Figure 1 (cartoon, chains in turn purple, cyan):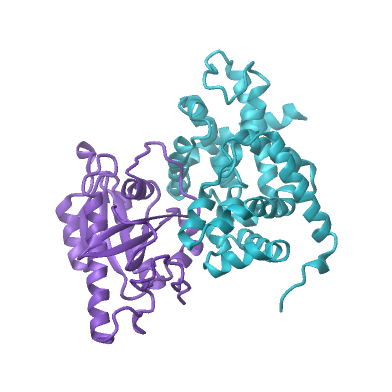
Figure 2: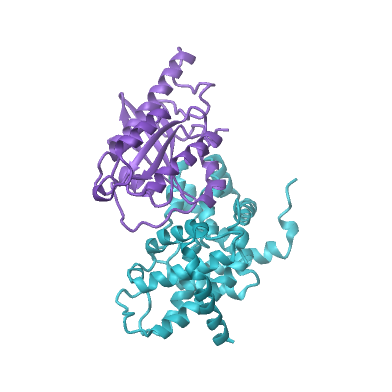
Amino acid sequence: MGTKDDEYDYLFKVVLIGDSGVGKSNLLSRFTRNEFNLESKSTIGVEFATRSIQVDGKTIKAQIWDTAGQERYRAITSAYYRGAVGALLVYDIAKHLTYENVERWLKELRDHADNNIVIMLVGNKSDLRHLRAVPTDEAKTYAEKNTLSFIETSALDSTNVETAFQNILTEIYKIVSQKQIKDNPDDDNSPSNNVQTITVAPTDNSSGNKKSCCNS
Amino acid sequence: MLQRKRQEYFSLIEQYYESRHEEQHQDTFRQILKDVPRMTSLAHLFQEQRIQEIFERILYMWAIRHPASGYVQGINDLVTPFFVVFLSEYIENDVEVENINLTELPEETLNIIEADTFWCTSKLLDGIQDNYTFAQPGIQLKVLALKELVERIDIPLHRHLEEQCVEYLQFAFRWMNNLLMREIPLRCSIRLWDTFLSEPNGFADFHLYVCAAFLTRFSKDLLREKDFQGILMFIQNLPTHHWQDPDIGELLAEAFKLKFLFADAPNHLPKKS
């Protein structure tokens, strides 16, 4: 992680969504604290964690929102999509139903999230080889058809967790930095008007607390 | 009376528990099956198949009798305090002690505990069912009320939260949905519920004042956190692991003070237009 936690060039809000029990909270704890808990409690409402990574010499702080998977919570959790620039849509490779429900989660994002949100389909629990119920190729094809990126991970044995977050954050970074060059060729420190969902902290603001975080 | 209720519970089980395999109840039962093994407050107890099945039956029976809300994640936590209190009548050690042995407990005793737990949980949930119906209006209203109350009693904290764009819903949702059970140790929840049970609408109305007292108790720590992430990280993992009865006593004293200031004098909390 290397950098001081409160210094960053970009702050990206990413949400973790998907059915209950697919391992969203463990993906989050693996990425942010390198921890895994076989008996982690169900998430109520949302939980939150951050971690900073380096992309292209810039420090990107990921603000990750872990949401509850149960249907009943959606009326409330949809409020948390506000301002999100990325979404990890997680299913369990050993539970086909959680994959079938990806369609519903995509609709959820279309209805409540920003149109430009970057979505990555994540097949978690890849360590459960003997129980696999969703073939990799099928999910990959589905992802391509819906222009999502795709990866299989295991929060338990750490496979691809780092890569998944690194990839989605890089993808977001590329979009944002290109937009900034296009919209504000002279000043790449100010948030562009067109990307209102993205919070950009000025590079020289080391305390990081002057940023605007109340996006509409 | 007790006998009759216990019999009633088990005849409900006999009549309806099979329906868990029916198509229309699949989602409910599946969710319960996912959540019960994940209840870690009494990890050692929940490793026992018999105990898991008791919770599954209680939750499923409550859910199908209350279709307006059904089973919502978090309700499972609310069963635990009753279960533990009733269980403690039959065992020598404190239930928080890791090595209690349930294998010696006769089936009949567990049945009594199960039935009593079911009815007590049902009674509790009757008072807060709007927490769990569609869009969870009970929770939204209570979180709003909490915000308005804190704005009156701790202006610096309220401003600090607003300035850092922390929304009350982001942390207090869980406080309402799980009645603070995720925020304090189980022994403290049991002590807290003792008071809730003796207050009119304790789990709904008085709980609000407890939440306000709870939040403002950490006012200094929260003011020390300088940004959004710091505040949320702190508030999600409040340092309450060591809490004992006296901590709850203090919390309740503060909550009673707030209740007498505001509940009986509603004009102290003017409705904003």
